[in-house]
Amino acid sequence: MKLEGKVAIVTGGGQGLGQGIVHCLAEEGADVAVVDINGDNARKVADEVKALGRKSLAIEADLTDNKKVKQAVRDVISAFGKIDILVNNVGGMGKILLARNSLDFTDQEEAEWDENYKLNLKAHVLMSQAVVPYLIKQKSGKIVNIASQAGKMPGSRSMAYNVAKAADIHFTRSLATVLAEHNINVNCVCPGVIYTPLYEKIAAQSIRCLPEAKGMTPREHFLKFTVPTVPLKREQTPEDIGHAVVFLVSEDARNITGQSLNVDGGRVMY
Image 1 (cartoon, rainbow, N blue to C red):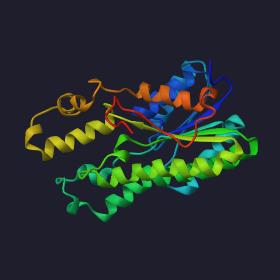
Image 2: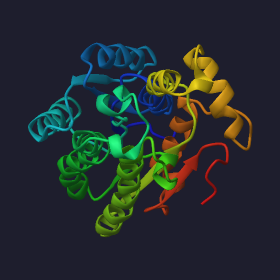
Image 3: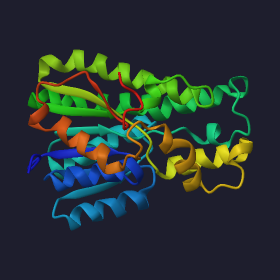
Image 4: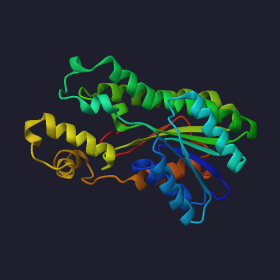
């Protein structure tokens, strides 16, 4: 197993992409701390890790709050004694964006931009700041930020989300530059189209706002409007993202840093 003896933190690990990432890390031998704002989800996934024969810890925390971030990291150190891997997966489009009944840029509120910044960038910065001192001390470590293909594509309906994800990609490059001298690799994965609880909320908004989507279920919306835009003509899964993360945090990728890897079936080819 590629990650035996390693300790990983996965933020937003209680469902969707995070859950898939947690499973893939555990299957490769890592012990995993599952951090999520939903404690029940975190505990459920932590139990799944234990069922795979690995150690796990569930932590309920809002990672846009620096005090809770620091406490979460202290809890991981107390439980495992070290941290080898940080996967900054927490993110999303936010409640304000998804509740909008208009897709126009001029209807996007200031609070929507603030919410997307906090979810998709600030949480990654705060977690990295809390974990990096431990990685520097041991002179090794891996950080993977989960951004999105949206960070490489223009978008009007979800501009705040797209811009925040683009910032996360640049944060990855900047952090990789700073930490290279400490033998710490920092990379980014940009997922493509994945049917997750977040996508269901996106589809619900489209069904509400777009005449051509009226009457569809979220899954029907996904199959009609999203999957056909993928050159490989198939959807991606949380485990596809998890396998990419496993590669980037393993010794197979020891000379890869500052990169953003698209796992999107070819939707973005740069």
